[in-house]
Length: 279
Image 1: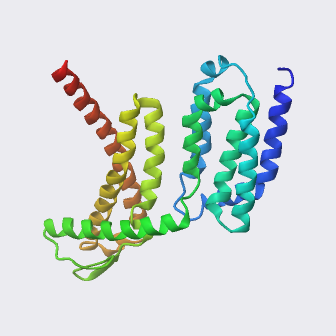
Image 2: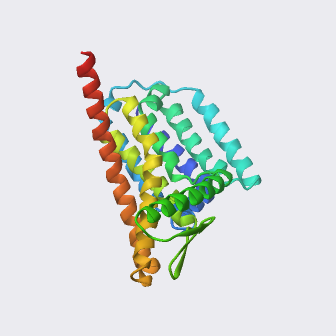
Image 3: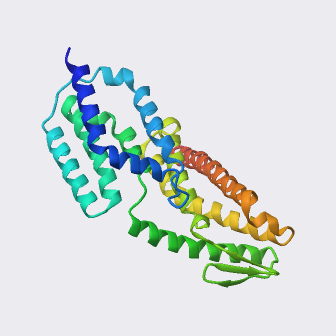
């Protein structure tokens, strides 16, 4: 046991040195306005805090180093090399997470990995989705957000003509770009749901429901942003660009986050009613 701190330090240094170019690229993506990964900078500290809250439980787990750690390290290294060679950014970045799990398994054993499954799983949210998935989802969300925005504005009495992702109102055209598709709010809300689930939600089924319903909540929240922008454009066109437009985006994320909490409350009420009825 005396050599454990040395082993941890050595493995940590080797992991950082080996993946440094990949890690710096991932760090840069968090501040790239086209990557929509602003929440990425919060993911690692949040996961570390989750692990820290389990420190008393972790102390009771016997240390049983596993050779599966060596397998995961080899897997991570191979995937990183292939990802860099093929210029597949997602593969090279997730290879770091595989290697991190390998280090934990090698030093402490698989039981420790199992206990840390949730914090380690959260780390995937600091990696941008694969490009082909990102582009397909973004396009679908753009069109869906445009349709929802059109329908809501018409219900409110505004005249709207939609062509693809372009909404034309009286005297103004609104383009539902990638940033307005909902992909940014969806990624941020999934991270918030991960945090909320860990600290406030009990039971796997409830957690799964909140994660699943985060998707339509994010879409509806972004549709609300489009509607608000459309209404604002009829009174003050300066509100559809610049700081005001960005503010609509942050407000929609906040509203969607509240929506996730309301979903949790509703699910608990339904669960209690069901138990009471069948109790």
